[in-house]
Image (tube, rainbow, N blue to C red; front, side, top):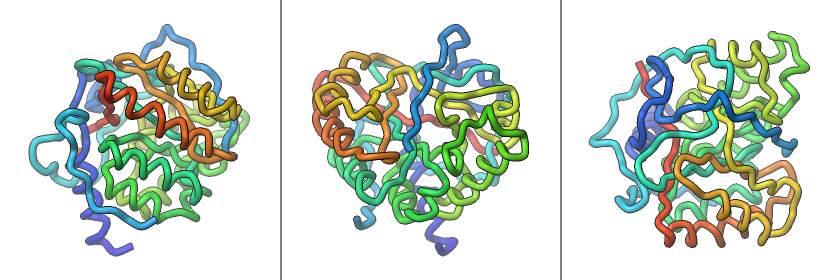
Length: 280
């Protein structure tokens, strides 16, 4: 990928980023998300087209930053947390959509198509081995203003690995994301929601914040499109982070559910955002 292409994608990403909410106990990281140390982290099960022009954010759905944000060399350092971020603070009825385990060449393009249709941005927590084979999809995510985070290379149970193994899984994935997406990820999600002190520490050392979720669609169980839609619509509320999957199995139900609930939630007045952090 040419350097000028990466710069274009970086500018596109920042131009489409959202500046909603207030920083939540994030120190100098400039977070728009806030964590809750009292809420237990639910375990997450294993899961494992052509590029479009940059979409112009809709004032109804997104509040873009004013002007272009200068490119930065590296993210501000992240502090070592003891719990992951589960929710975020924002104005109005704003929530976040996130998709794990991709990108998948069959299902991810359909997810991106639906998000593009309704001018909505989402967060994709990608696995390195999937991203390595589908770099064009990461490039498209950058072009369309989505945020890409790190979900390890092979989706292991990190709490069963030593520090060297944890770092290798995370760092190798960040390298691939940087090559395909245009910049290193600022957000990390542990597979299965399994965190320990080493995971938090290495995560912070690599400049990322730990992002979990507060609404689990349970789409990995393939419960049926209707069940996924009902879970997400029932959990929709200000500040929630919704967990879905765009890989790790047959995600056709997830694709159909998104086509169903997204326009309904928009019609009901919900807004969608992506996590935001500052660079040095």
